Length: 468
Image (cartoon, rainbow, N blue to C red; front, top):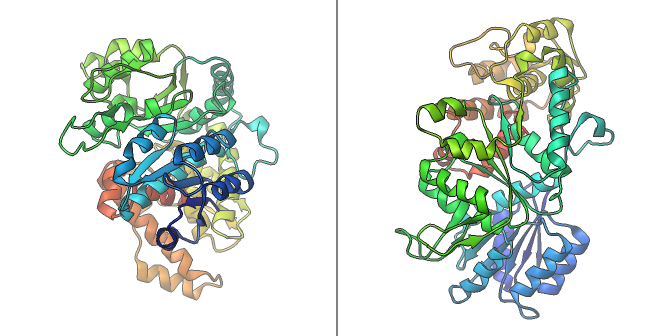
């Protein structure tokens, strides 16, 4: 269970934040002084920190520096009053994750904390190769022994030995984020922060501000200077997912950054120097985008210095039994279901499927099967209807179910835990239909559902609908 450390000397704020953020899957640890906070980082090793800048025993910047000295990759969110925003901005320049202005908007607080915990997870949870899998229960494992995957492992090893830009190409669901994390965690900057940005999930104006920051007054609503991720992640690694969706103006700034590690904030003209490694990924045909005038050829050549191509699952069917067994073990633990093996007829049906959603679809299908299994074996009839035959749109989305009929079936079966299993099924239908409606755009889906984007990602991951 992740731990959030909250450091603030105002008892009412500590109480309110603890009450708002406390959840079954999150421990909130409140302390009232900078020294207690620093000691908690040293002893408890929290996953993220909320740090007030005005503390009785030490300045917020000094406390932040000491926390960073203990754990450089720990996401620290600064809380500040209007009179001390310059201190917060300085902390962001030195690597703080984000800052919040008091009085805190608690809906924004939840979103920022969710994002900080997600970044912490990507920094801390290893993305391991098969040779490192022993004792890796809390790790994300890249699975596969096929010849195609052996080439991927070699490429990860080569990419980790140098510091140049890496471009990862592959269809949706092939594991691009996992490969990016493996390169980072085996690379030269593994002790520095890792940040992931989905270029398709943010509107053009927000993406440019998120990456490069903006000056006060740069556009309507820009009331304060904002430090972007490239400046914040100085010394670390940034993963730009779905870079093929980046707008032309953002591409131009990204090109300059790759050329000389300099950029300007939105609305500014003063060059800002940074030192970041970029790992980019896309499921699109960049050559086709260049021909259509939608992607800069000079940026492509800068990104294409070292390229890793991930094979679709249909081209490495030899890995299917290994992948299915791996996902079965994880699903049985996550869902608390005593399912231990996969029947031959289920393997045959899976082998006959083309898996347009790739490894992500397989993982979802296995979790679906574990929920529907009546015994300790996954049989062919436990798999979703789309497994073994294609439907328009593909993607491995199981059909919607009749809640009343599903309830009756479970209530007449011998197994218990009906409420949780029905809740999982309902969540799956809701999230799959929402993601289908918005064509995978997590930001728009989260907004429509009334939850934060990172909360959505967390739920998708729990349901096996998102890698990592």
